[in-house]
Length: 374
Image (cartoon, rainbow, N blue to C red; front, side, top):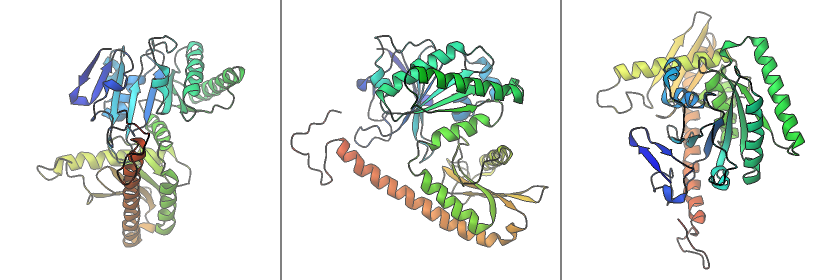
């Protein structure tokens, strides 16, 4: 087993999927005593389907134009995503040439502990081979871990018309479903998204994937529903400010144009914070006191408040309703207090769940007959 570690980017290149001996105590994540509690997202698909470009654009703020110069991935790449207290997971980018049925790869190790399997299909290329690889991968993964969420990105749709996008999505969905049905796996659900790195569709699709890995999602959505109903706002998003993934929104449908406006607002606030933030501030001036109000020419107001240094609440408010800004500010204070309680509860549960995982009872005593293998 060979590997190289790039400390500057917290990324690892491995010749084959690493075993437990590969991980040090700091690489297994948050690590309560060496227990890896971060879910994994596996990025898979054929060569040149756009997997690495998606990863770089979403999580490393690379411009889409720069991805044209990326070399094809020939080793498994692990990328830790620790930016938000809610968004904590590992993205594993798998080269398209890897054959999981080869005895050199331990599928049990690859798919166990995986939260989501994200399969990328190039919409501008023939996808018969990709569908065949998708079927084999999904079936193999499901045999190992039935809790995996299966996500399919029909990627590079920016060069297609709306009719072509709909036709391709319908065709891929039907053929993938038929393939699984023929294999006796009709109980497997595939979520399919149309994506491109040249617009916000890739961020919205990744938001949907990440949300499925957040146990507190129903609670967050309920809090947002309560907030908008008592504040007179039209729409509210809870954003991870680094990746622009929204980890929750209220129950009303998401309008793509509204989502794009909110993403652009976050970019403006972060850029201004970096320029005018306090000197010596590691966060670029972006802290719990950060807020922003942008008035649009269509009688709409964009309202941003910092929940913590990872999360921001971004709302769309009609200008007439925004006259009651004091009420909105008060409701936001209540909302932020509730979010903090969720964080605290999650931290306590994390510490408690780590003990049984290590074979330790809550009083710190090792149960008889149990051994620890870390």
